[in-house]
Image (cartoon, rainbow over all chains, first blue to last red; front, side, top):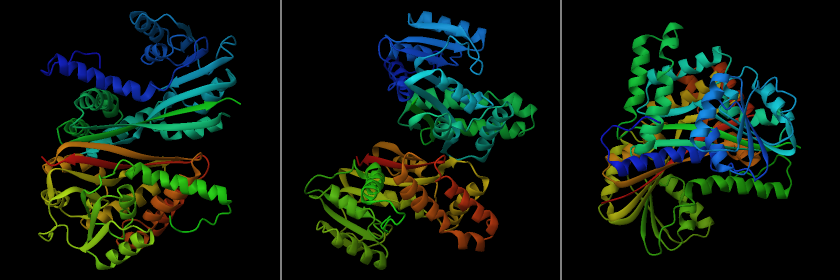
Length: 268
Length: 268
């Protein structure tokens, strides 16, 4: 969504599209704001895509953002510096083998991370141990099984299923959103409250057509083209038909739905 | 959901469950209230399941509820009378062949009707013609393709797909929710705004576990057992495994999602 928009709209339209892209950020993050002085662990910050929003929404909190990848951390540092944010410290660390001093946080925040882990419950339980009693855990995950669209397309469904299968073979779970509630319960957390955050896109929402259907969801599925074909999960023609069908949903009579799940809970 | 609840909860719990069942009604209907004196056509009222709510939310509107079935109308009349509602007139009429005097309404309301029709666009266009200029059209439909759950189950997905296929063979479309936006646009309506209404059920929402997952969604799928088996869409064992899997989602670690779509638009 950082590319310039080149489809001929004017400046006002461009502002509106940014507003609608911001809607997606608001949908997921607007209700997460930590008190001044509280300590927050962002576990698995990656390249900092969520870190900037997290830090902006909680300017007085002291955020520690960790990731296992030094390369990702370098990008995250850059993103946070570019945004002029000063309340984030970065550390290279493994979720499943946390350094002992990363402990006793008021809050832990985990976004788009558990979906990649072979043992998400172990990770969540380990992070729960690093919370103070009474501290809160926030988990956000998508669920590719929540994607459906008009016109419906078998080829598009097969292309999405190929992405899910590849993620499964990589040890992850692209359908984890629906499991956020049982995972948080099983990790020993209390007062688990999960709320779905549905993205609904139709022709009356051009910012989401472009920012979500085209550049987020379809781009993500398109991104597994080579590994999906290499794995023989479907034929080149099937895959390309599927991508065309997803693009077809961006026409004025098309629709697309996708749901994220956000869970918040408390350590007893 | 009108049966007494007999699973051993106390009176307080019973009130809470009614509240949660009411939540579903609120989710779909709370934002539909027509002004005093306005005329409303409820097209396809069936046995009056929505009519009572519609009339209660708009006590000063003059509602005409039509259905093609005299037997359904008799039940609807009974339901409305039992609720002490006086602002609904019933008429036996066919959506696709409306009597000329059913015309010039301020508002038209269509809920769970288009999914059953072979030509939903023709019906919607015919109803649009019976609106005054500036009048509003409200459409509510479900979408069985929006159903997913944990634990996931191939058998349950096949049982749901059998329901969708049977409805298709009957001339209907159980996946019509995602099409509400293009249908309303194609019917010539303006300012079409569709909002999804997602039902998310997990162990922290016992009223929805019982009222929605068990008694609404699973009961509906279970209801097509005989025709699905007779049509050879799947084996008895597969179907029964599927129903068991849907019941399995009502355990404390289970989840289930389903989405309704509500569209509101204006006649130019």
